[in-house]
Length: 392
Image 1 (tube, rainbow, N blue to C red):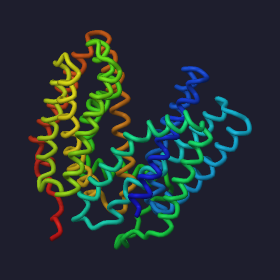
Image 2: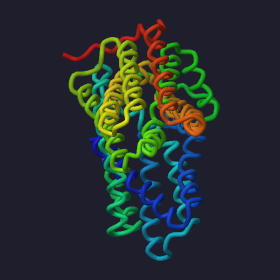
Image 3: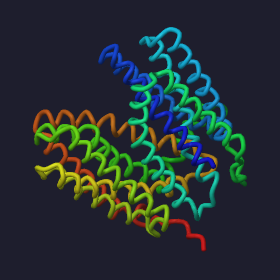
Image 4: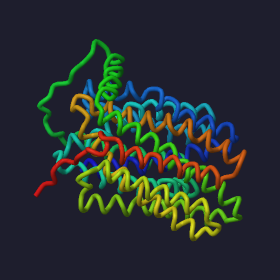
């Protein structure tokens, strides 16, 4: 029930994010950048605080409050667009609210699978969520584009409001598995946030896994959004061909996630992550060194398969090793290390692609990911990770 509601809400969010960016781009390119920054900046800055709030007051309560706020905001946005039209002030205000709510909502939502299923089922549950999220991410943009073209921003806002209503009803109906551990609270929410960092830094499995995820994410995620378009322009591929390459990676991730959801993860998730990183690096080399879009799509599929196996095996480790008192805070740290790694790597890779070539930048990504594979294979903490026993 929760996964169905969460994916419906994610689909509505994806459509709304596209519609906000589209409406802002009609004003100017600067306006579009401001609106997108209005979402990402507060989300990143407040993420640790949001995780602390989720652990202190309960993930379900935080999510109910967030959905209620966004339901009201989406309805109000639709009404204001109909009455007053779109303005930069309105779009930026909505973007800021979305970013703030996301900062508190996402860590709690990330912790929900462990609150709802037994530890032995966690790997399959997370893989099912990842595969559903991958499908929704692929559909959100096109849905937003179709709705904007047919009915405008107001209609997109009201569709998003309907999805928030769905997940709000689901959250009211469901109950998480009872915890035998009481939350450990500091004197303040800020103290809770600092304590989350301390626990993650002091837990070898958490620390090593977070660093490995940051390294791989920082040099895999920019491939689709930055390097593939640059490679396409260098090789003279069409926009459609570049889209096929990106779609091939998404399809590979989806396929691997569905397999993990069906059969479960590896008994040694650290070793599986090392093998997956090796597959990712191999696929990146193929994408970099090929000259045709179809052969690049084959390499991108290998990248996607590796990403699906990597996430499908390490996500349960992060959630399973985290103390039950710190679930939302660990999810917040996961989002933060990925955002920080992306902030650095995207700018470095863009500069490298400009100074040398997109091919060189893509090969650098493959080299770094290959190094991550070696780290996962050789670090005792990662190599020794074990998954929870599977249910009969």
